[in-house]
Image 1 (spheres, one colour):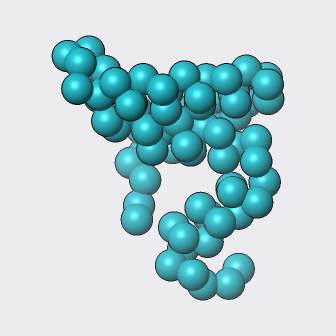
Image 2: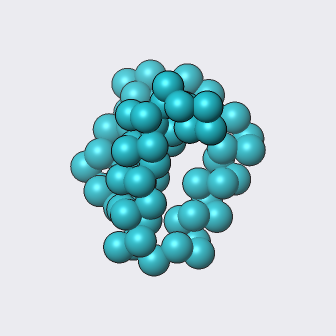
Length: 75
């Protein structure tokens, strides 16, 4: 899976500018908003985005997502 360039830039910006504790909170808020995706403003797209933001702080989850994106290949 290739991430859209805009999404990649957004994740890099979040990683650089948002402190780690707030990143986790932001990720949880995105997931919670995604659960309410049936509402007009919120959407189910928020769930994977929230998981990616949380993964920035949880190293084992970040490694697993990185391996998944690479197709299971080693470095």
